[in-house]
Image 1 (cartoon, each protein chain N blue to C red):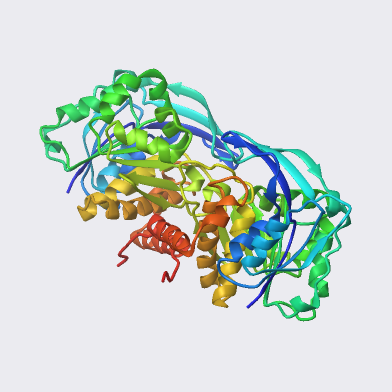
Image 2 (cartoon, rainbow over the protein chains, first blue to last red):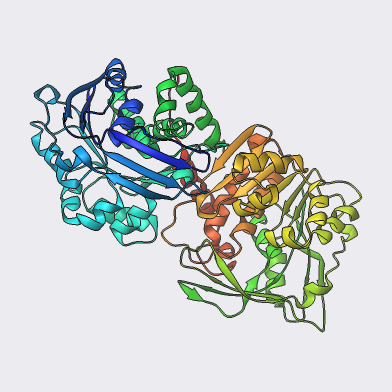
Length: 307
Length: 307
């Protein structure tokens, strides 16, 4: 079972109330790969990096079963760089620097070796590029999951809507769901967004958990209450990686199994925020993941007798 | 099994983005009684009203098994009146008017007929008055649940801390938990607050659900995602009423059963916000409550195999 993952591989510089980093590894596809790789191989990466992206990082991903045939290395340009500063509540942040570098020329090409993948994860990226990847696939994947952000709603709404018509699952945060639908109530927003194409909608609410909508059903997964959220960067991508990783591993794309996949995504995201960048994701073992999943079961499990 | 409930019985005037009321029935003890009365009788009310409080309302409460021996009626003064306006997000509000009226002279007296109650619900009220009720009880109840608010933290912290030392369960919202503990992280805040007395702490997060802390355990109950929150007034008191009502009904004050009680409280609160004031609470039947509880089970239930 293989998963194609499209997105950025990049450098970030991050400032949070708890500390500051210079230049560390980041990018949506990086986080997705580190998370999904715990559940399924190969993760077939499609991305672009510059001459400065560390070979050790590439090797570490390969060691984890990530295929890099689709990662273009541009010899005379730098990798995409983003720098941001989180506010005290960690739910909002200011972007300090966005250096597109190689990303300005990104024209994703699906390698022949990736054709036939059953799962496609479209990380947050210009909608035209997401569309291009979908159109290059000779067989439609069983499940296409799409992440996006408010920036594309402001600047490329028509393209975004075209991609929406072709995907199965959309991932957005609560503010983006409201912007995309024009509805304040998330229940109404979900109904409107599902009319735009995706049969499943996941609305991420950061420390307040995530909602999964499908037809008239709704499921809620909490975020694990943590003593400290050290760095939220990549938490959404890590969530997506855990989500699609679990679905690909179990080969079951039912609503019932998506509930479990969202819990797995939440568990992976809860690790991500414990250290800067994807550092914590590199350390954890299967036992760590199982222990965290048990915490989620305890967090929400209750008995009730209805007579 | 009886529950003593101390708090206000009052009039409110409410403005929300969805509408406006003139003078409707409100007060913390009113909401607690309407919610708890679905699960346990008698609810033994301790409150104070003026000459203007409607006899029909008293009769409706009596019909539901609420004892009013402890409700003082002041012949020459008006009932407590509060008026507020909710912001668009419904999570914050401005107080427009607070007319204490009878509440300025409130000196709660526990009637002899209430002695021996196994459960005590201290609704949000001046801490000195909450303390006075505890001290009047000849036998300590099995469980004392206390609600409070930021206003008492600002104006009567020493008294508040004295009450905290005598209660089992504290109910506060997230902002109040942070203020009371001086900790930003809710996990750390919970640890500090439990050192102040209560063995159980419930942190209410409005539309983002509620957390229950006890020793090193934590449980999370979501709020039901609603299409429209019509009027949040009284939702916290209704939550408290459902919580203590379920515990009193089942006579089980274990952490496990408190999880269920929080779900029951959340279900009751989800009805409360559907109409102005306690109106919706007066309409619902046992079948409605069971149906809502089933929705909560579906909202959070998932299967996971850990090997």
